[in-house]
Amino acid sequence: MNVPSAATSDDIPRTVVSGPFAPGERVLLIDRKGRRYLVTLATGAEFHTHNGRLAHDDLIGQEEGASVRSTSGSRFSAVRPTLADFVLSMPRGAQVIYPKDLGPILVLADVFAGARVLEAGVGSGALSMALLRAGADVVGYELRPDFADRARRNVSAFLGNDCMCRYRVEHRDVYEGIEETGFDRVVLDLPEPWRVVDHAAAALRPGGIFVAYVPSIMQVAQLREALAASSFGMAETMEVLVRTWHVDGHAVRPDHRMVAHTGFLTSARLMADVEPAVAEPHAAPDSSS
Ligand SMILES: C[S@@+](CC[C@H](N)C(=O)[O-])C[C@H]1O[C@@H](n2cnc3c(N)ncnc32)[C@H](O)[C@@H]1O
Image (cartoon, rainbow, N blue to C red; front, side, top):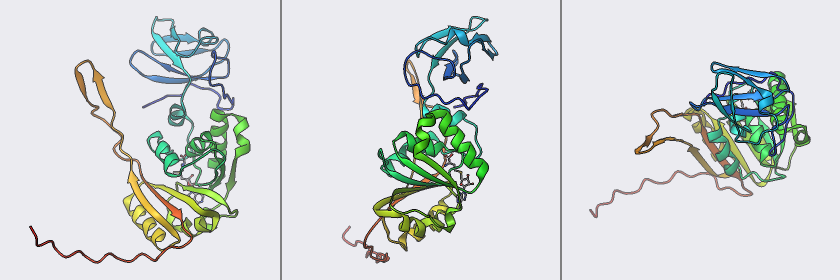
């Protein structure tokens, strides 16, 4: 889904979730062909498209779902962008985690309102937004100060300044350790999560959940080895495949294109006692059949 951004400012925090559109708010415009455009409303401004100009004043004061016409008569529907819409269109420093994986990460990590979450690396802040939206208190570690700034700006642009009191991003290398303890969750999106396993075990409370997103199965193998040698148990790895469908009258079939691969999700829980992993003996061949 391509969502070109026509917004000129990403500094206007808007947390409006209902009511008529107001100046300063982001609005998602959808044209007749389903193309999406994200615009920030400003009194007197115009949005320029291939299909004519659209006055922001025609949208300000309208309810979500309203239709407006451009100067050439093309119709656009207007709604507030969802977190997924925003993540796909926001300014990026680093590659973001896609919405298809953000939802499963929240469930795998069992994120709840008030959960204390250590997140590393923070990148562009997409995962931070999902965690904060679910009500978590997030401490982020990020190696690059420019990415940390970008993440803070993206979070405040979409979730508003109120949520910044639950979000602290520190310029740190998580491979060197996690300073605080008592976290409920550790969530990672960085190249060598196996180097964080021991730090996570020291930073999490008993029963705490570790989740790591990595794009390659070689990284998964190395991470699983580190988890197997640690005090984490219940380790699981999964991949989320999403296939959309074309539904048009009797023409009902899977879409020809899909995002075939993004990454693998590995989760584990911190145990008080873990038996060292023992290789299963090979089962004798079944001679009964
Ligand atoms: C793929 S990006 C994360 C994207 C982020 N999850 C999102 O959804 O926007 C990976 C980030 O990890 C950071 N990183 C890499 N190694 C790190 C380390 N040892 N400590 C902290 N951050 C690290 C990188 O600078 C980069 O910003």
